Amino acid sequence: MEIEVQNLRKRFGEVEALRGISFGVFPGEVFAFLGPNGAGKTTTIKILTGLIREFQGEILYRGEPFSPRILSFKRVIGVVPQHNNVDRDLTVEENLKVHCYLHGLWGKKQRERIREVLELTGLQGHLRRKADHLSGGMKRRLIIGRALLHEPQILFLDEPTVGLDPAVRRSMWDLIRGINVLKGCTVFLTTHYIEEADMLAQRVVILDAGRVVAQGRPQELKEALGRYTLEIYHRDRIEEEFFQSREEALERMRSLDVPAKVREVNLEDVFLSLTGRRIRV
Ligand SMILES: Nc1ncnc2c1ncn2[C@@H]1O[C@H](COP(=O)(O)OP(=O)(O)OP(=O)(O)O)[C@@H](O)[C@H]1O
Ligand SMILES: [Mg+2]
View 1 (cartoon, rainbow, N blue to C red):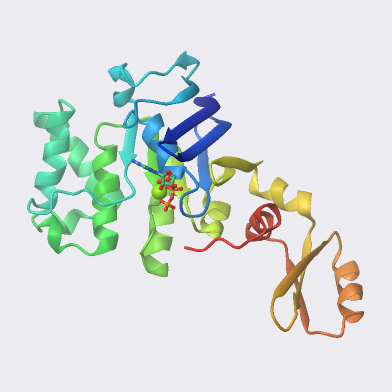
View 2: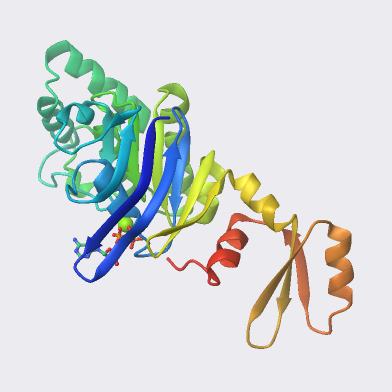
């Protein structure tokens, strides 16, 4: 197991941000943390990357107990925080170089790493541009590229695609898949977008108000609910019912006297059935 978390708890004064969560991340997988605002996603990433030092519970990295005081794990991980933290006054190249210096990458090795990262992120043509003048999507790419310079084996991405248009989000998905497949990097990402987790992740954890409400492969989670969703349009609300076959769903639909629609079960249905509400971004 790449990362094992047992009964992790974190309290900020009155707020219980994490109420005892347990999960594991396998080597080489894309693992997604899904949950609404305030669920505890960023808190978990901050604990796992050593930014929050006080917590309760047990964390193992590759079987070894983790402590934020052991600095060697920083070489193994790359972190893309939720909020862009590029040096806005520096160029793309300077931003990358600063990170290289921090990780002791110099000379030929530095040039090689920067070239590879630029290729992977598609930022080759923008080396001399000030980071402040990049679009939101490019800034995100720069931060992802920066996190990859020291060749981490585990990459943490906290909401990599928030605020990006649909085309840029898709290109970001390709980038994340590329990092995972070509570089063999384990990816731990958080997102509000359910279809993003469904598309990218081999396994997901659904977090709500500091608790794990479901975990597993997206397919398994969906199958546990059923195969077809019947959406029933009442005057004041939409209700969902789940069925194993399309025929059963259609039969039920014919028995109704309000409009309804049959479609395949998706991961959002799983979330909704567990928490009783839709994710709002
Ligand atoms: N430094 C802090 N001090 C006090 N409360 C905090 C702090 N950091 C987080 N919290 C609280 O802990 C809870 C979990 O926050 P967290 O940022 O982990 O959620 P999240 O799932 O990342 O949400 P979002 O989707 O909005 O990024 C929230 O109630 C938040 O207000
Ligand atoms: Mg967050």
